[in-house]
Image (cartoon, rainbow, N blue to C red; front, side, top):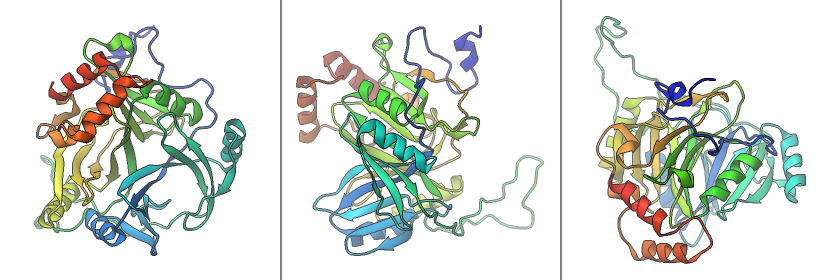
Length: 374
């Protein structure tokens, strides 16, 4: 039998699971979703939302007084829909079903109905509610958006491998052109129940678990979760969740071409007065090159490139949860990115979490606080 710790060295984590720990997958899930389709938001000012969307690098699929649909350059579905609302808030994710029949299977098992998806090009959807209270849609779209022209990666010279001669390198200062939606990160007070729901209901599998220092025996407090596409490699994480005193959106991530696209797009955003939250750097779990920004409503979005891809036979890694463990290189994680700044809203969430029926208790809270400064 292969030693699990040895099996994970030089892969994505030095540690594998111990006996009896969460397997990171379900033996018999209801369905296996194929990808994130889009994310749903509400915002009071669609004009301002569209300006930021174009500056961040999205294309526009459709726009009217009530909805704004955004896309990347890759063929497929839209990345995001923003609907007119009283406040700026995240509604929930929509996942893409691998087959139309998966919607019928899911509807029967959950007592839901298959309905029209109300998406450009048409389609069908099943509406669910996860244990955290997030509305989750599983959709099958009738039409795929065609591909658009994208940014080409710059030719680079490596040692004696000279791909660029008699030509200077001058990447234009312009928006990073989004290729596709990569992942969404959520905070939840009911981490264990939410994790089981996503693996049992949607057939997702865990790439990496994080645990609090000295509390591994109590189970993980963060999971990076990917779609199970069998032997076809999938993004290291399509969904990430972590335990916290609140329940809500943390950030969403959008793939761009390369490091130069990240950097020049970041300069473009900075020149237009937007605020960087953290970056540029390279993550450990997932290995992505990253750059995080706040939109005018303070929601966080990430440009990323060069992420890990895992097939279904890669087992979960296990690692301690810490701020310093978030990146291989780059500036230290900011308090803004970590959500570590005290605020009346955060204090209310802590009080409510400690009083409620959830995974939070004083030891968990103390462990999370220590992780943000370790």
